[in-house]
Image (cartoon, rainbow, N blue to C red; front, side, top):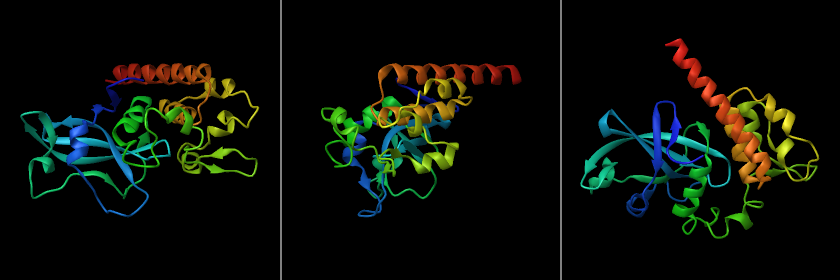
Length: 220
């Protein structure tokens, strides 16, 4: 998936490097922490919806911020006010709202790879993807994503982890919600799953998203 990331009625675009350079790390020293990766405008730029990504789990959390239109476009209002601070990273106070998308993960590496040890840079991402997956090692020596299992009712790693001999294709065909397919794709990326399998998941996700969009049009 490429930019923009479309979620509900918003189009999210990559956070500029300049925002990160002038932002602050809220609740310094506390963990777990999430990191700004993409933003969407609403109400003519008076508000921003910003997606913050977890460094090792395939989640994002969305927060609202006031927007300000300056010479370089719309930015968080706090960046235009020397008396305020814009949180480029923060300790989440809410539950995850969505799965991270491929383009966001790539951008997270670019923005934060040199700043945060848990986030690989684009150069070493391929090497670290298999070990920096944020999962827990199960008794069968398989990476698990328990939080994701609680959210969608299953752990895609059961089918996708390198240690399993299960064929994921029948389950991929049976996915019925685009959000579940997006979660599967995020886990597949984190585990370095074969490109053919990832393509199957992408096609299923796109098919379900298109079908859902068509249904919304009929309902209107």
